[in-house]
Picture (cartoon, one colour):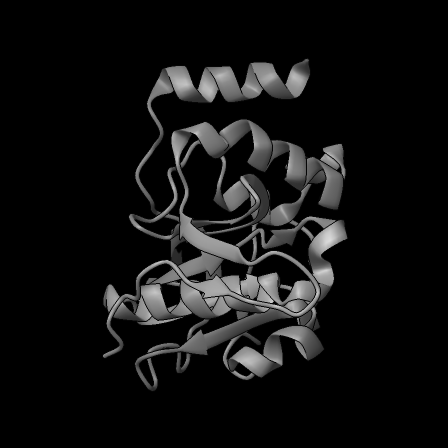
Length: 195
C-alpha cells in the first residue's frame, strides 16, 4: 500500500513552483470560480454533479494546487456505491487555463490516486476523456454495465481498481453514499448558485 505523501511541490523551468495540499475552507470561493471558468456556470446541471450534490468529499481527498499564493487547480473524490460495491468517484479535476502546461493536472491526479489507495479505497470511477486518463490506469473495461443518474457517454465512464477484481461483474446504478453536508451548507451552496 502506498503511504500518503506530504504536499507535492513541482518545479518547472517555465515558472514558479506549485504545491499540492489539502483543500481548506478559505479555498472554497476560489475553487468555485475556477470550476465555473473551466466548466461553465451550467456545470451544476451535469450528470456527475448528482453524485456530489449535498455530499461532503471523502475524508482527506479534496486537494488544491497553489501557485504564488493563488489556487490554480482542484480535484476531489466522493464516496459512491457502484452497483453495491464501495468506490470513489473523481471529479471535477480543473486547472487554471493559464497554468495548463505546468503538469498541475497530472500531479493532482497522481496525488489524489495515491491518497485514495493509501486510505484503503478499492476503486475510483470517473467520467472523462479516455486518452487523458488512460495514462493513470483508467479504462472502460469494468464500467460497461454501470449506469449514472442521468445522460452520459458510455465510452467516457472509466475506472481504476486498486484491489483486483473489485468491479468484476458490477452492473447497475452508481449512487452517492458519502456523508451529507450540514443543511446550512447545502442552503448556502444553492443560494450561491442562484446569485
